[in-house]
Length: 151
Image 1 (tube, rainbow, N blue to C red):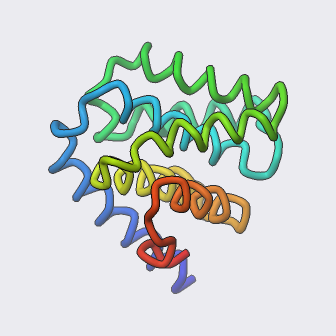
Image 2: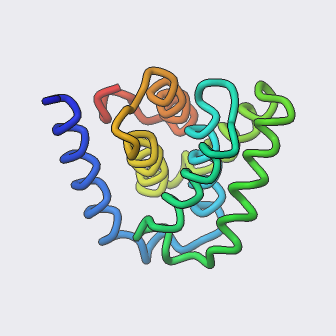
């Protein structure tokens, strides 16, 4: 239980910090990277079932940081990456990681995308090994040490 309490506390801190920076991140690259990260988390175990997709979409729409973007744009991007991951998981994963990797030259935005992945992954109370691995891969794609996020 202590781990979950620590994760909840850390997620809240991340989300609060992201809210302060949100206006700086209002661009298409950040939105696309965020949705690629969310789709990776939804598909972290290799599949995306409809209920998982729906829950992740609901979390995206309720996230204060992502609230700076039109919901229809986020939905379109999220569905795009989910469809890629569903059709061919390995190639979809490469495409999603590549999209996240485009933020490598913008470390603040890259960190924010990673934090969104952690927040979405832990929202159900279980930031499992597959979700942790997905965030870790994204860390490598943007050149940020996974240890910065205790991964």
